[in-house]
Picture: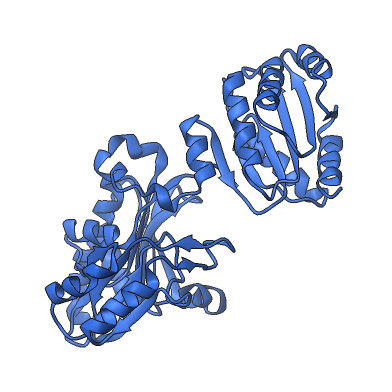
Amino acid sequence: MAPREKMKIHEYQAKELLLKYGVNSQKGICIDDKSKARAAAESLGGSLFVVKAQIHSGGRGKAGGVKLARTLAEVEKYAGEILGMCMITKQTGAEGRIVKKVLIDNGINIDKEYYLSITMDNGSASPVIIASGAGGTEIEDTAKTNPELIIQQVIPPQTGLKDYHAREVAKKIGIPAPLIKDFSAMLKNMYRLYIDKDCSLVEINPLVLTKEGSLLAIDAKINFDDNAIFRHEDIRALRDINEEDPKETEAASYDLNYVALDGEIGCMVNGAGLAMATMDIIKAKGGRPANFLDVGGSASAEKVAAAFKILLSDKKVKAIFVNIFGGIMKCDVIAEGIIKAASEINIPVPVVVRLDGTNVDKGKEILKNSGLAILAADTLSRAAELSVERSRA
C-alpha cells in the first residue's frame, strides 16, 4: 500500500470534462434537492430517464443507486429515494456513503456495451489502453473469469497515441468498421485529456453503441495524480471533500501521508518504505494494519501530535505502533510529539514504540520519564509482536 495518489471526481463532472475534450458523452443535469428533479427532466426532454446517485464509488446500480424512470413523477420519486440514502458498495466499505447529489440523464437505446480506459502501466512506465467488447457493470467479473476478453495496448510516451494504436484497439474489441474512425477520434481525445490534466485514470464504462448507430459515453470515471493538482486549479475546484475520508483530509492539511485501511493496529512511521515494511511485518505476525501513515522526514512535535489524533479518531484502532528510524526525523522529536498528544487527548489504547537512529537515547529517555504507559521494543519483530498481542487484549 502506498500513499493516496489520486483525486477523484463525480461521474457528472467526468462527463463534462469528456465533452470539453470532444468525447461524445451524455450531458445530464446534477441536482441536490428532490424539488429540482422534475424541472431537470423537463429540461432534458424525452420520455425515458435515468436517475443516478453521485458518490465516488462503482457498483451504484447494485446498491439501488441507479433507477430507470418512465415519467416525470417517477424521476421525482426516485430522486427523493436516492438523495440522503446511505449507499453501501464494495468500494465504500460497511460504513457506506451518504448520497448528496443525483444525476438525471436521458435513457439510451443501447445495442452493445464496451469498456474503454487509459491508465498507467507501471511495468513499462507508459500509459496503457485497457479495453473490452464486454463492457458494463460486470467488467470486473469478466476480467477474472474471461481475461482474454480484456485487451491492453501500451502507448509509447515517445510517440503518444497514434491512429494505428486506436485502430488496433477498435478491431480487437469489435467496433463496427463504419465507426472505427469515430472511435479513433474519441480515443485520441481521451488520451489528450489524460495527458493534459495529469490523470491517473480516464475510464468510460460503458461506452455504448446506440441503436441509432453512434458511440456514446454514458458513464465515466476520471482520477487525477494528487502530486500534479497544483498545476490545475480548474481540477482542484472539482474536489468534493464530502466524498473523502475525513481522516485523510485532516492528514493532508498537516502534510501527512495517510491512507485508511481495515485493520486494528494504527501505524505511525517515517518513510514510505519503512511504513510498508511495518505493515508487512504486522501481517506476518498475525495482525492487520489500520492505516498507512508516513510522518515524513521533517515532522515537528505538533505534526506528530496531529498524527496521533488522526490515528485515534479511527474507532477500529485497538493499539498504536510507532516505528521510527531517525535520520532527518529525530527520535526525540517523535517522543515529544507523543507526550504532546497525550497531554491534549486521552490515549485509551496501548502504544508500542520502537525507536532507532538519530537521538534515539534522548528519545527513549523522554518517553521513560514521561509517566506514560508506553511499551518499548528494541527490534522491529518484537515491536510488531507486542502490537498484535495488545490489540487483542
